[in-house]
Length: 230
Image (cartoon, rainbow, N blue to C red; front, side, top):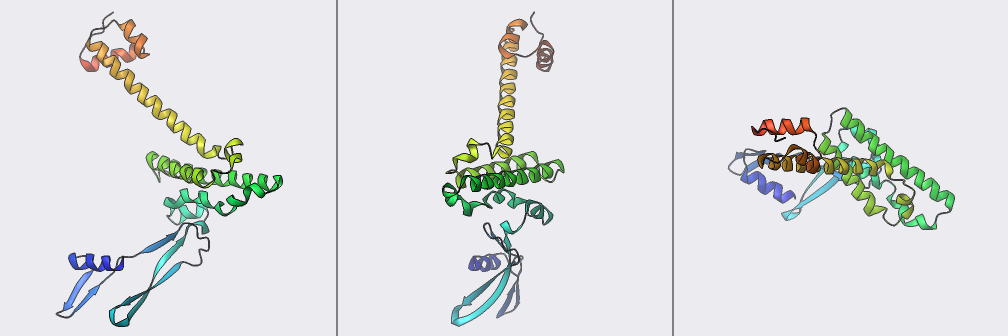
């Protein structure tokens, strides 16, 4: 990565690369950060890198390090890190392999904590959408990533789906799927109505096959410059 940056600088002298004389140049490297998706200790907020150059020359520098699981969903938003919200679903990943060996009481505690985690993630996403900090498409993209990670990481725990522990996430996904299907059906019915109106089919027949009412059909006919056939 470092040498690619240098190569980029040399090929783009206007971006941070400055030649000071015939033998010297200065390259101002772009600001970098490393995100640890499973890291929890947010006090370790620096990653120190030693770059060893030819002739044993050494340069040590630091980049910001974000330990994603060191923040609650609310803290991620406060620090403009909401893009990491979907990865909050892996907070309990280290307990997954032990689940089948838990007592019933411990399983119930795990499932309760899991339900609360899902609720916290979704409620935070809902707030972002309500406050218009993310778009509807971004909201559903984040939700889909969260659900995909949940399915991949917790797929061996049947109790999660059996007891509806992840319903806080899945309900929103299903609502979106229902909305998409409804919109697609509405488009198909409108296209069919346009075709039948152009073919001068009777209005009662168009109603029957499209499910659209007379008012909707009159509006479509008007947009086509046609008159409905009674």
